[in-house]
Image (cartoon, rainbow, N blue to C red; front, side, top):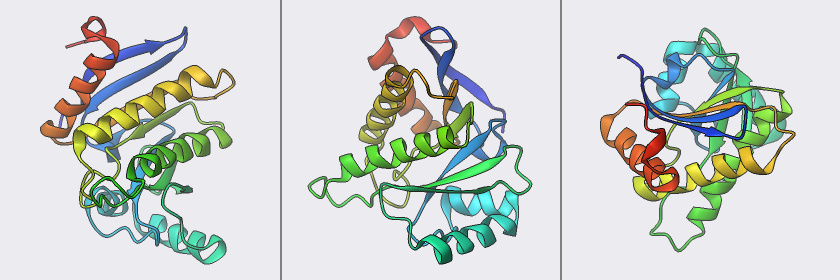
Length: 196
């Protein structure tokens, strides 16, 4: 599918947040973020697509990570190479399963986003692309997901002047999720930065 930038927001002098509709596995960034499970078993959804396109090496490195470090707890992240994908790394972050909102899901999703961004900075990365973590089979409501992810990304870029990150794309393949992220961006930043 053709990649489309729906919205672009400058943050400070040299940082940018974009809302992108497109295929996460084709993003030309330093790392893409995978919405993973604690076992890093990449069977379905975004995770399955990443391994299908990037190759078995991603699953093999994920298995090795779990053997060496244990399960990736909800709200934390791991990192592997990207195999044959156009990026350099895949950051696997584990968001929460939605259980109605009373089990700390919002805080766990925020932590998952922060962990992914922190992992990128630890590896001196300049650009990352994230999907709507937890909003697929984990059932997190998409509008709430978009609000939390945008807030965490904005706070990272404004609150960490020493961060290596210069470009954060929020990339989803389907129109419904992309439009929800676009609406959240417009509410947060206003219409003036809309590039469409």
